[in-house]
Length: 291
Length: 249
Image (tube, rainbow over all chains, first blue to last red):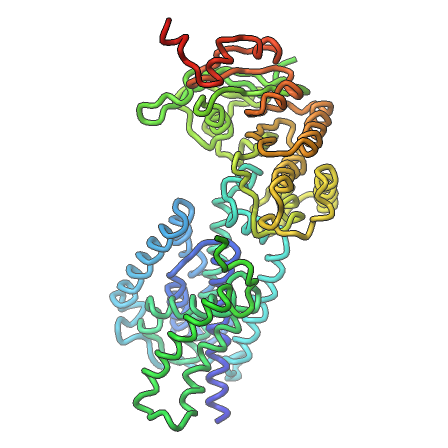
């Protein structure tokens, strides 16, 4: 039972990192990406390769994963500088599809469809450690950094760009630099989540980095409250613990849990958007239509 | 004394429409120049060409002698040019203080260089001057119309620019707000700010402008003191949409 909850908590922390970093990009900077799982994947493969070929050092794995995901996020930043809104969603969708194909085909780095297996357990100073404290530490640090940025000048710059890009530029703000930095930060965070995921699961394959995964992370962010600090984390807790909670309801036959879960998800999302359109922790004056 | 901002022969077409065809202007320091003309005369396009929001087909523009055509809007802004927009473009979800504070912060990095206290002081002074101090914590989207107009002005004040391009800043204001706005402009003029004002309310223009440039169909038809321009029956006819004299010509 402890192992079960420890596994759930680790996944919540990892997906919490994904949701809060996506929220930084969407909620503060207004860059609506549906390709967050790509950078999660890049981080996972990078972290796994470090553990397999160099050393199972989680700090090194996370650092390399953050660097690779952060640098390659320029692939996402470049379209973000040219197009906005729904056009950018389409551009990031394209990136998600290209990346998924590359993940399956570049077998020397990703292991192809079969993925990378037997990733060694993480060790700090030669002692094997669990991923949970590392993931919680990373989540805490990221939340602190996001809080500091959101309340400082960088957060103000991003929110200004989100609300009125041309006015921000007319006040002397180089919009392209700010957007690229926001994307790089968020994607580097997703990379860290990926490295921790690879070390936790000891196995990664392309199945974990699909569009469905990107949409799940987005759902966590929206359910909890886009643009709030803790909302996306609350969303991650809810959406990951729901399947586990359902499995405790003995009157649902195990074979039907999957479909019951889908129905509850769908209903919950619809009701939430009707009654709390800005998410559970969001400012409810934001989501309502101002007709 | 040379004008801090000048342009020569600015031109821009959209498809077959010649929106601006060879506009030359000079904005002297410590003076209000009004751009007047009917809708579609090219007034806002002139602003957009100077600030880099639109690429000019031809012509030059200088800010204190430095060519600005080809620069990006943020680069032009950093030379000391601040502009307002007809549709205000406030940072709607941010509060008033953050809107104004954002105008004092130009860096796009994770941190700002320079004196943080000076920026805070500039923001507070701009809110004070525009009467927004009591609303500092209110979100821009929740402000009344006149307050939004003043917030747009507060951003320009806080930016510390000495060239202001204002696009219909007084439209829709009641008399009391218009008087307050007039005082803001006079104070700035007294400090030596070069102000260019696009305005349809001719009372405001006569009250505030030192010079008028009358634009029609992308051309400066006349330039001079407000009383002179207003007294020209041909310009008045164009402004009020009567083009019969053209048909007769």
